[in-house]
Length: 254
Image (tube, rainbow, N blue to C red; front, side):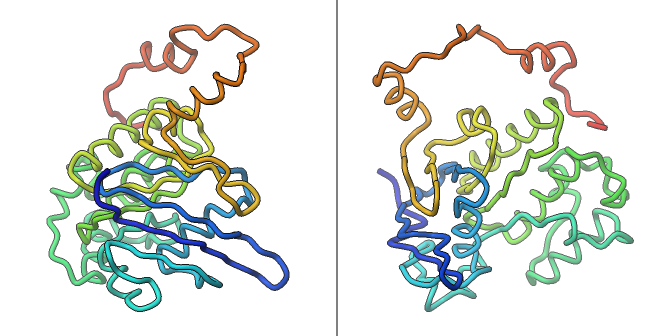
């Protein structure tokens, strides 16, 4: 068991009479990719936003790298990176200028080209955000989470709307980021994505965690109940065919 970098205990979030989060508890190990999975409205985004210091909790305890959320929220902000949505990018600035802008907000000195190299966007350094393809936009958005050299990054459905090529490319980027020592917390509606990327997942439904384990162990537990898929699973699927025929090399992703 490694060091716990996030610890959530009995977390509750209430909006009037509606309880969105109902006593959630989980730990995240340093250096793992941890997935929060659940249907829309399950409470996963609310949970993430509380940990990210973006939303107030009703009760419970949240510790991030030994820092208590109630006592040191500003210190927590310094060690996390949160993926920005499209509205967070000024349309008149190119990628280099956007990185310099965000670096200034973090009071960090950053080499924009080195950061763009990390996400394979050096050739787009002078392009504006709106000129990028969907996959390029997501890679740049992830690059902005790395500006302050965070210990933890939060990615909320990072591959939604991407084609298979761009999605696989983003998977490799996320694995590379983890390989450099950064802990990754991810939400996704794609179960194949969670199975490929996540060391462990918590499945949330109606504000409660109903399962928490590695994807492999959760699958084994289901199979042990006698569950069988109605259709035989082949060694490859149509997405594998698409990737094999169109290539793995990063390109425009238009």
